[in-house]
Length: 310
Image 1 (cartoon, rainbow, N blue to C red):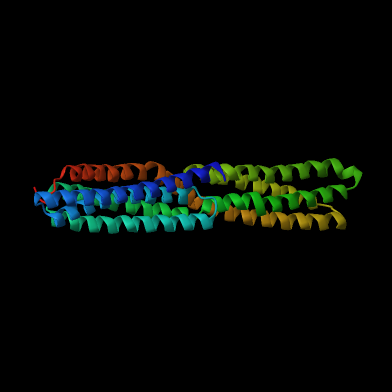
Image 2 (image 1 turned 60 degrees about the vertical axis):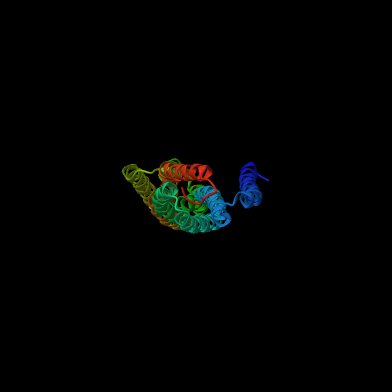
């Protein structure tokens, strides 16, 4: 099992165990308190609601962490399938948070705890903002446009470039000795231009700024023109055998250019870069704000007595 997988599994297991222990502790506390109330003439139903409110507040913090973790995994996933699965987990977890918050709100209203109700309302405000940002993060993450551009560069684009190289090599090999020096120079120029385009694709895929991407695209276009010009010059006065290989090279270059255009289009959408930026810059502060409100709520509930009202 990979280190990252073990870490995720460990965190999930820890959350599950923590939740179970909290529920057991709440149940034991409820029994003990109910026995005590029976001796003191307290209000068991009100205390039962208080215990339930505390449990819901505990669950809210766990569910919030689960939602945030699932969203992070969707952003960092390497495949569409994993991104979609983790995004669904995140949406399910945020739905559970919303449901728990609504249930807790009803409990607090019944108990008549205005301070805790305000803390929950503050949490709900932060959570609404978090949920809005998280939807954008997940929508971008599942598109995986940068990953798709990367796979295109390492797969079909490279294959087309290799086919171009092979065809030019065959054309050079069929050239008469007296023309070999000129042909070798043009072949090297064309191949270098295509390889430089491949090199430029990586920074384009990773680049977040449109102005920089436009500059890289301009450099790509210049090298495309260089490759085309060299191929055209190779065809002047060439014999049938060489022309045949140059036609193969031209077809490979056409595929290369078409695939490169697809790559640039995917890279321009920048879904992985944008989702990661949001996940790193926006969501941590929102999650911290949500958790802070829940911590305040838990603290308030821990200080409440058995009467159900102040």
